[in-house]
Amino acid sequence: MTDPAGHRPLVAFTSLAIAGAGLVSASAYFELVHGLVSPSALAAGAVLLAAGLLVSLGHLGQKRRAALAVRGAGRSALSNEALLFGVALAAAAIAAAAGLSGARAPVLAAVAGAANAAFLVSIGLVYSVRGQRTWRGFSVLAPLTGGLALGAISVQTTAGIGGTFVGTLLVIAIDALVFSQRWRDITGIGLSGRMLADPWQLRRTQLLAARFFLLDAIPFFLLVTTPTPLAVPLAAAGLMVDRVSFYALALQHTTEHEIEGVEAQLAAPDRAEQD
Image (cartoon, rainbow, N blue to C red; front, side, top):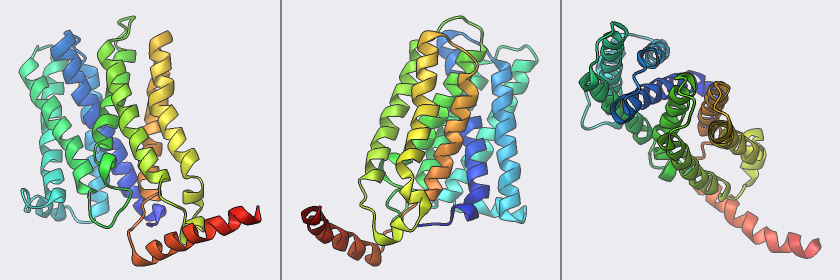
């Protein structure tokens, strides 16, 4: 397990970056597929990405480390993320500037959307590391589906179109499906003695449920019934809970944990007989 308090900069960075990239990608989708141009959404996404960059630079401690981070591109998942982050931010800023100036530039929107979607994928791949039992599998897809869901909800509810696109509901449904699988994987891990001493692990079901309802279930219901901007802050809160739970529920694969798990399984029948 990891110390959630020590991951606050990463929680802030990933929350801002995923929200920004999701907003840019969703804006590009709505413009290219539905003809719904939303330069303000593109600009908001670029601002969130820039804020994430500032948090990241503060976390690195030295600005020159940011340049060094991309030197391993192609070999390191972290370097790939750093490189794609720069491309995604630059593409989003250019597309937003063109949109705010009144120019129709679908090509720029397409490039920005693709770059930011690729960046979301890279975030998941960075944490797909050996030894972390809750950072693999469907967790790799969570930044992409969660970011797109938040972005689609934001554009959909602030565009003032008076209806809900099926594509928005589909994106939310896909994120709900991906997250439900991740939820099942996490809660399927038996609680060892060490995990029972961790208050985050004891409340993992409540934490995961809060993420599911805030980012998926409630916004989906609101969009189906009466689309309202209220879905945006709810979904944003859900994304924040997602990132907190991602680090708080991290579980490292160790021999000690395996032994404790086996002992817990052996003790289970005895407890059942006593009850």
